[in-house]
Image 1 (cartoon, rainbow, N blue to C red):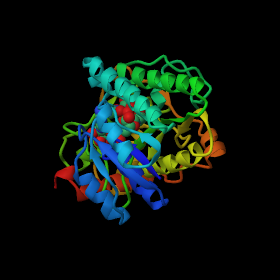
Image 2: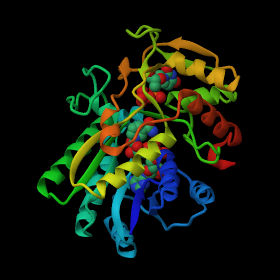
Image 3: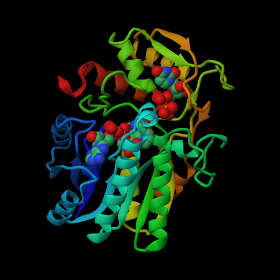
Image 4: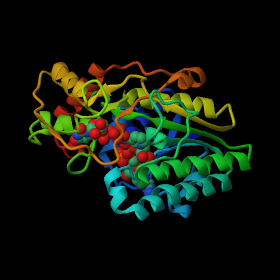
Length: 338
Ligand code: NAD
Ligand code: UDP
């Protein structure tokens, strides 16, 4: 029996493949390479020393999915595939609803048809939206989202919860990620954004290596200790390990569970810049810029439920996150294109 990993060539997916293989699971990977490269597969195999089937396939392609289920014994799906750029989702919302929501519906239809009813879904802290105080807990209200990307995550959570109500054989874990950063400690896999990064950590590392002149800090007038936005940064390998625990859980339970994956620690933009400079002995010039529309001031998790249900806690700190990001950036200045 194997676990199907959709979007397994992407940033979080590639790290999860490595951790799943090292935990002894067999995996099958599928991706349409919209935001990833085949080289990620080469490196996953190199790091794990294991081989596995790969399908170049789109989650909206029902016949392509059927073939994967026919050719492999799939007992659960870790579903990463989707579009994730917040700004782009405002410009082209239909592409986001089609890919993320439509794609997930097709995937669930084929899973049900093939008798595979266990899914780990990549949700996001963004579903907590505005109006909830941090630390954010799973039973707080969700849905006051600020962009179409966030709405797709909230809609998919609802769809998967409805599915579990309609059929008690389904098992769904909605993993609400806080802000993943860092890279595998080998420096062989990491985040490889196309063009100019939208997110803070890849931006910092591209400034540090001299690809970009300076960081713009989006607002220093928030109601936070230093005025800059506070997030719960989590090492991508800790996040990947959370998926292994979630699969263990989904194989032995039914019903839907939303679970935060975060450290529980709030870190400001300037805290992260300073941690990066100290950990790596590099310079990161920055300027203060206006707030980014749609950003909340503070967003960090209460990770208690993940500890209780999955026996999981994050154990890598900010220094690890900064060092591992820098190692990846330095060893792969052009990402997977080297
Ligand atoms: P990513 O873009 O690196 O990985 C997503 C992968 O899915 C890519 O390899 C892409 O080619 C593939 N893909 C996209 N659409 C597809 C389709 N229709 N069919 C098949 N493959 C498709 O992103 P990531 O950072 O690894 O994120 C993985 C998941 O986690 C996404 O669903 C994302 O929304 C969610 N998430 C990410 C973050 C974050 O900050 N990175 C935070 C919260 C949630
Ligand atoms: N941020 C910033 N400059 C950038 C990118 C991000 O100041 O170039 C800030 C952003 O306003 C937020 C924090 O960094 O307070 C984290 O942003 P990111 O997009 O990485 O993660 P998210 O907000 O989606 O969790």
